[in-house]
Image 1 (cartoon, helix red, strand yellow):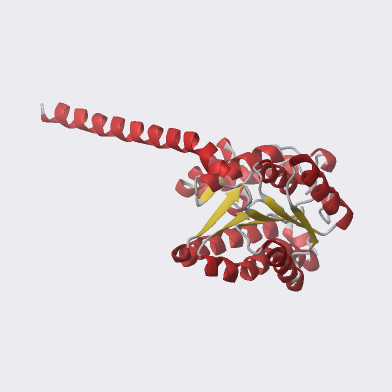
Image 2: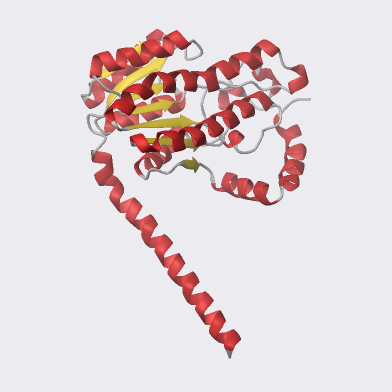
Length: 302
């Protein structure tokens, strides 16, 4: 009798917990439209904004009525994006040519944003690059370059904007990482290292700045259809056509990122199977490692 009673209690608790989770998720979904309205007139700085995921972010924030500061290296493409969004959504935009691997460029980006709009509400550290090569064949200069862009670019921009956010007692730092920041990807060791570094930095910073009312989110997409392979220094290492990089769309990444920001989700991994893989990796790293060893030959040339 006692065993049946205990089983009934466990089932009841599990049922209550499940119902609470469903109710909480439903609340988040239904509260998003109201939260989305609060993005109107907020100042959003986006790096790597001229194409791919960055451009998708710019479009979604523009649609919400935000004021945009768009940063990228290619002036013509950047200014074209800024003009297009300004005309399409009737919003204020500012284009600032920026190479995030250079600290003075990042400082200039934030200074121009503050001078033009008076403050920054959201910084999206999206600019990034990758290399596709086995580590022992990789050029050391390429290894340094990718760290300068992916990691130090985030650090420079964040360091430049934080004092103004702290003084206002509010702000959001959104760091665009990768599933490779959770599980190391073969033939992309340095890329994975930059994203692991980004994740660790974000976790530490989140705890530091919470008392100032500043939110830090990490977004970890899986493979996304962008020009990142085409723009890499050694895309000839992959077996597939770099022009047709497989994966989810930038629009999906942007939508899920927006939801994570509105829900104040500290970390969001995009991709059902990727979430399963990360969960398995925590329980049995050897299983994931063995899988990666066998799948690498289907993606990269030896």
